[in-house]
Length: 533
Image: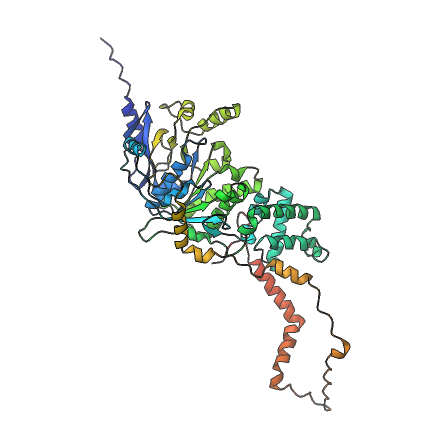
């Protein structure tokens, strides 16, 4: 009997359709592109990510020039169209083009045909912010107290001992009722606590060494020279402003303009983490939703983790792990997945991996580590794939609607529908002028705070009055024998009130009340101050 002939291997098209079947969804989804297999795209084999899985976080990685920014733009557009607000870091100014409709062309038309996309030029609602007004966007500021000691230590590049000492200073400021609003407030408090007059205030808490205070003061001066003096202050930005939709139901895309502070990477990366931490503290628990409440794109993520302390990394990991239940998704955008600590990387269920380059032995090692984080696949040689992908192509694996990883799909990504270049400055200026946030945050405010209060303490007391200027003492009232002194008339009630207010009992009560109020201030994972609703 003749043995049956072996079955013919599946065709390239059949393999592409099988891979795409792992990306099928019943609910709304973001369209990423089409499966690449056998050296060609397959428009009928769609790669998508369920909208309900966007709060499971994600990673967009790849070498410079491989298309990470356009992928970020593509996702932000579709999220906005689905009614989900977006926050993104615009480091180079490229993403301002979201506010303008894209320009048709041969390349866009060809990409649309290859990915099965009915491409239409579209503009999206964008809110432009700028750190401290260093740029054209609405100024964003934070108070020193709201920023907290852990994040500030990251910005100042302090060691563990210095970070601990800074935390002690913040604790004392809360208890003593000394608002830390800007850099001069913190400098004044540090100088006070190592002075002869103020040194005793921390004696029971371990004290603050002049050497540590000196290091922190020097770093604060350096930060001020780099623009921190305009970022720290009031009015402090309310993170709730990030969660807005337009009248037609589209999510507002908040682009944080960072081009003017590219030389201050620690400041802008830590600022983004501050925004995320504030959202974590303020948003209620909502569990799993049909669509996230907000998606946060963390560009240049390697800057956040470089040189970070153990306490800082633990706080980042915990924030990323827990903020999912508050309806917030976080995407880290970086050149190499190994830039992200494993504790954070393990929380990122959606992966868009653009091409990696292997010019050095370290690059080759990073490639092998990246391959090991992908699901097993017989459809691709991942090491070869990740080094041969072209611009606008990526290896994708996301979480399906049931929460399981999808098969790895080499994907030709769709073209964004907005302008793939920086927007016209006049258009950006018009958007900023029309923003409702401009009136709220446009002008800085400098109110009474630690600097003013400590300066008042150091001010010389008023000179004592001359002897001939001392008012005559009222002669004591005579008491009649066996009788009480007559009561004061009603016109002297102010004197009674003055005696009460000046009494030791009242002063003790006032001190206790003030201390209790100060202790109501609590701090979250990063030491950031929780705002009372």
